[in-house]
Length: 370
Ligand code: PMP
Image 1 (cartoon, rainbow, N blue to C red):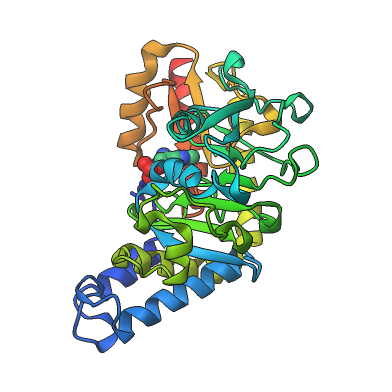
Image 2 (cartoon, helix red, strand yellow; image 1 turned 60 degrees about the vertical axis):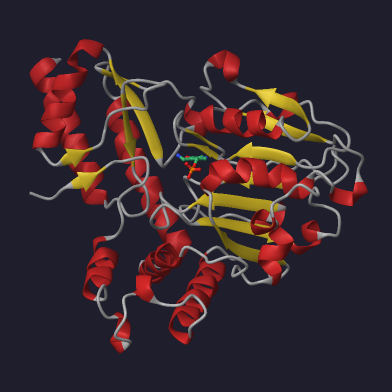
């Protein structure tokens, strides 16, 4: 029986990648060493790093005036690292102000962390509607000159995803847009040039936990932009100047991420993957929409293609639903504890067959219990 893993993260990885990693586990390409055992400054690992950097830049279409950083600490650490690196932009007096768009659990966490370092203006929030939609762009109350504007472009827990790239430059004196893309990076084509900073943890669409990717426009690494208290290992300028080797990078996670990038190239790249993701999400949402037995709560204009929370009309059936799913090899469908119900995460590495198997089970369970 095939197993399909719907975990929100750490999440399913392409089987071919795991097979290659298994084959190379004890001896990477005749080096006599596991990647885990290599010096990060040796020629073997340097070649792995260079290929991963080059492939990511090509896949994500990163313009030349952006640095790609491989860091640690995950997106939660970046919630602090972002203000620590940007609040001094342009020599502004401290405490400086940054703007946040609150669209769910992860942006709430980001803005709470930012309050430790400066003033936060919550320019828009959908909290009143239980994060069922992205606040209308016309309603955003942006500051005139914030250090930056932060958003989370895919809310992993709530299941909302921006289907547009907001342009905030005119109202904010060209403040850079900073985006947490942890849970949909490389799942769709992004115009990187519209952003100042893009960051994300690797453990959804990219690889194992432990690696954080940061894409930052070079002009945002200016002198004095980082606050004096910013730890050196988290200072983007220092990390960039050392080509992500200021401290020992998470070597094995970078190696696996590199294999995922090679796999993604073989799949046709991000644009091809986006088409597949659109088809997978449509299949699942169409099934949920066609039934009164299942419910979704997110406005259709901003439903996530990656994370699909749904609810059984009768909560009392949740345990039976989950155990029946497990018997059919459909794993980790339980919703986040703060939202309840179910959640299917259908990242790049989830094949269409996995979503088809889930849809077949949804229909069968409804027939039996509906
Ligand atoms: N932001 C988003 C959108 C996430 O999905 C997650 C992890 N689920 C985080 C931040 C936090 O990531 P980490 O635990 O790796 O710091």
